Amino acid sequence: MYKRFTAVALTVLALAALAAAQDKPAGCQKKQKAGCDKARAAQCQDKADKCQDQAKKDCCSKKGKQGCDKKKGKCGDVSCTGEQVGYKGVKFPRLAYMVGDERIGCPKTAAKLAKEKNVAIRYVVGDQVFDEKPAALAAQTEVLEDFLGSILSVKYAVGDKCVGCPQAAEQMARQAGTSVKYRLGSFVFDDQPTAEQAAAKARQAADAVEMKVDNGDVTRYKVGKLVTTSKTIASYQLAIERIKAALDALESAGGKQVALAGGGCGGKGAKRQCSSGAKNKCGMGAKKP
Image 1 (cartoon, rainbow, N blue to C red):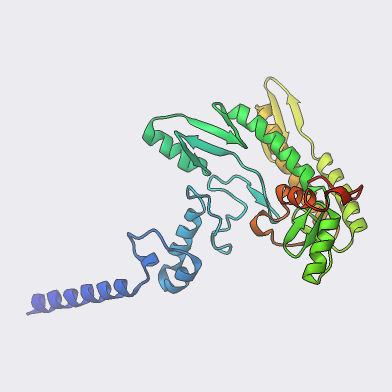
Image 2 (image 1 turned 90 degrees about the horizontal axis):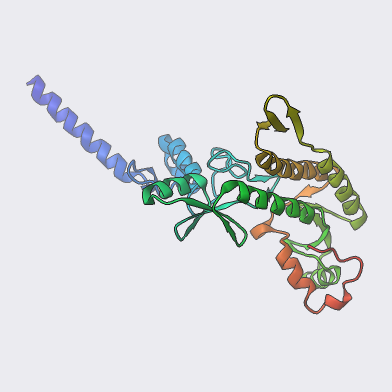
């Protein structure tokens, strides 16, 4: 009698568990990895943390999604390998990886796919493809240095749009019924003189970041917390640290951090605006993006 009662009880519990699982959204199913976004994670109740963990992993998908929950995932500025990929609202230009004919954003995903296909990883910087990572890092360092120059070039913002030509910005502002702001990276200033002063301070802060060299038995290079025997890697890190120092200085100068929609103050967009009808009117005030 006892055994029969136990068997019935276990069956009832099993059916109840199955019904509860079916009531869960798809993102909470153990075998279902997709769909663990913030909205579904909120419905997961006791499994919310697991959904958030999956949302964090999704940041490192092939498409390089950055849609993690910031409270749990916290990977908006950190890649799947822990690499710094952004700072204070600015996303850094990054290496991409080629495995066969497939371009991938995450190095972990690229390494896994390369192992499966038994092929070598190639490295992409802009429209250049490199077989060796040191050469790619050297090229990427130059990209980051140019990126710093772009951040420190005052551009003209109207709402979430940004151009390099003041006349184009004034026309946009009239049409929108608002005023022109002055943007440096992810920071905006109300007047141009303040923005120009902030840019000068940010340049000084960036230039103050240096690479230290220890010429012992083995030459070592130190940049921030990084210590390496590779000057190429140290130079790459130096470029990143200089961008961070510049952004810190812009914030200290009173800049208001704003969201960069679709990349925000992109140089290409600024060029198009300035090369349109306002091209011949852009005098000394126009900054090259």
